[in-house]
Length: 466
Ligand code: BES
Ligand code: MN
Ligand code: ZN
Image (cartoon, rainbow, N blue to C red; front, side, top):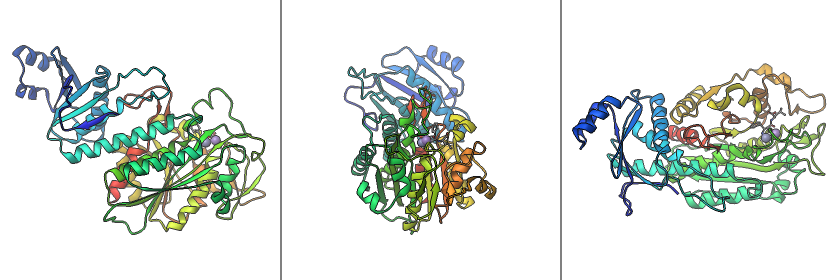
């Protein structure tokens, strides 16, 4: 596991990288005239040059802009440097600016590999990153926590159903709680039945594996919020579509990632706890796989939900909203200040904006949407706010029950949100992460597979709320 450190590793450094604010600053480095000339002629803002030395030495010039766009450019630059530095120990020498932090973060995130299932593991990932210059203990701690929490979320998404069942997801949340310092209670099927979580149980009916409902709680010392913030994550450990079966191969191949929202919630609370944020957060993770087993729920079924309302199921592939609805209704028990749910909820969200951001909508105060937007820019997990007009409700009218679970082809991401809204009575934000949760090919520092999207976004957001 990669770690940032402020102390020199025993086995020494293989590659030093100087981060300069401008090429002229190279004058202050210990370089030959020839090297200095080379750097001055070659080094453009947002690029790097490598000198042939042992240990290797690279000089990178930070992008000019000192805003979130510049920070992202710094991450991308780091990705390029990481590309030529496999299996080694790096030293970053810089002043601890936001750009330098972003560079270090990008380098670490780019080094991620999910190699658990290879029988012969090639260890060509980065070993360690030494931060020299003005980085302090606090910077180091925060970077390590955020990177580790993102890796945790990526690991969870990358785990196939053959390992990560709903029950196991509860165990993994418990493990994260022990490691990072928060409480976890996992409700089993019997308990879920006694609570009458009809939405979660309906989806689970086609499965032979039991559902789970995990409750995470982190209350930092000196928590500033009286009422908790609740994060809800969709934990569909595999989505076949149920009887409304998805066509295979294409649309089912990556459906182990349908618990990306759950991974984001577990990761964000891990990061908050590791960094001891003075905040009170609850995480709720309803989990099951969605399968067309013998007793599976069928299109046309009417389901009585946890809150007592009824839903006509017209497509068993719209399963995420069934279990999120129960979790959102359960969240009322906490009299929350704010609830944010994260879910790989609709293909429509992915079609609308692609992998370039996440879709958000809801009923929270504008101030919270603004904080979310700023947090999203900082993490470069940007927010595309969708409308939430009441007319969309008409699309969910059922002839037999309080609501139907699909709204038709138009505005699919929004009608999913509108369905969920009925189960809330508090300020609420719904985030659909279907676009970026899982990538078929690496995108710079976001590796192929699970991206951990939502972890850095929600960590920044929680930080902005303290
Ligand atoms: N998990 C899917 C959404 C999804 C699709 C996530 C592609 C990531 C990539 C969700 O459960 C689903 O199947 N949604 C349906 C809803 C429809 C039946 C109303 C969809 O988007 O097609
Ligand atoms: Mn589905
Ligand atoms: Zn799904």
